[in-house]
Picture (cartoon, rainbow, N blue to C red):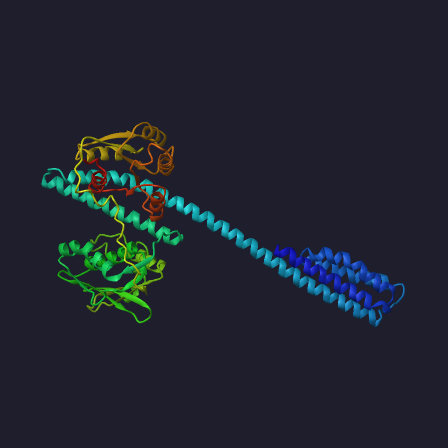
Length: 496
């Protein structure tokens, strides 16, 4: 629409200029008038074309004027020369306008192409993240689940050590998978964040509590110097900010001297932000390596020292901080002062009303009700290893009877034909997506109230929100723990 209006304006301008010049220059003789009139048509065609068309019309007009003037005058009159100059000026203006229009249209086409390409890349990245998450987390669910079952059995010291090694390796691999998926999501701009006012004291205390056992095992003193932080809030995703702080505290514990210390403190930075600094008494980092530590898989000499890790934590933490409009910086030296990592987030006012956070039903069992009789659970799952794992876990709850459906269509038919007390529904089934089954059951008059828990390897918060919005009662992420599944069952066991 805009381009058509622009061309119409340029066309009117060309007609006006050429016509006025021809009428005003009647004294120059009929040949000049005829030349002016005969150039109007080609000028109109050129205006809607590109700069080459306008140049061609200019040359044509000069040639036509000279040809018509030749029988009457050997030399052009002053009026003819003035008309020629005016015609050349119109041609120059038209060339500039056509060139500008062509350049703008080319930029618009390029922008549309880039936008389409970016959308395609984003969609492909999202599909890649979903597939990788599913293909890696699904077997890890069986590995870690069966390992946890073994740890609860009576084992010899050698068997227990081997089981602990498997569990440690599995957890390391799971952490690596999570980090790779997070880094990919950040780089592709598809990281899902739930930004809200976050209490500084709460998130720091959570991070300290999560790393306290690691500090005790390593004989590292862990000190939280919070001071007067009550009422301090920052704008952040609480889960991601906690993830950053846990990573910084864990690194401070790992890269430290025996009987060393790690200290975490919070302070206003004077620029509208709150800084949370994690300091350690470790050997420090050379100034030449300060930039390297934020690069993926860069571990410096940690591998030689036998320290576990993937080398992705710091780069991921900085990416998460920047995605939440914050920053992560480091100061360090090799002179015994250790290292200090500081994450700074924008400060905000306290929320007007403090709401009690919604607690997932999978995390809070029902402790007041006793199961009565036999409860029936339908597990829709295409992976045999995960089925066997759930069968073993359900042996700890003999009041539950398990029915298995190997696919989405079969699962939907069973759910509609038989009333179950709970349905465990895998999201990524080969023949029918879990959300489609969920929607069909929620639209059914007889099965709309049956509790349905999505069991999925897709840990993206956006996917969890979509499932809960579609009517799921809970969302259990693979690999899940034994206690996590048992809490789901206990919370929904029929009671008296």
